[in-house]
Length: 111
Image 1 (cartoon, rainbow, N blue to C red):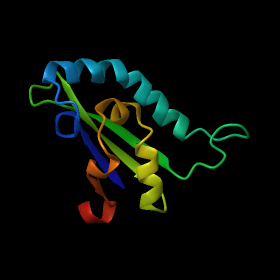
Image 2 (cartoon, helix red, strand yellow):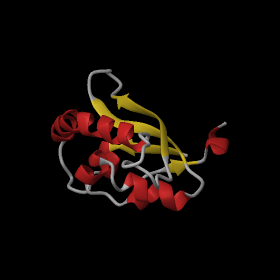
Image 3 (tube, one colour):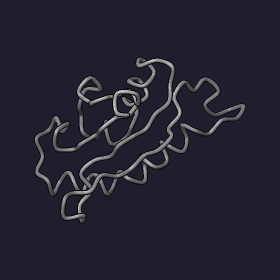
Image 4 (cartoon, rainbow, N blue to C red):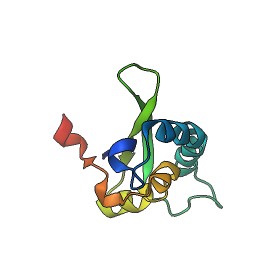
């Protein structure tokens, strides 16, 4: 699955671009940690994980100076697991949007 998280389109609070960029910069570290922890497996962490994060790329504005979102490549057997996993993303939580609003695509639809 591919998830497209664009801050301005998903922001439930109607914030200005500058505020969204500032929040994105602050929450990038939390997002990276969230992605890494999702792929960490051992006896105490993620013993029941149903989603793997293959890639997470930051999307930049056309001037290539501001982060405006991110693209996640996720692997899971079921869409329900993807949606519940995305709901725990720190950036998605900060945007206050519904997981149903995040565009999701299957890889075969893009090829």
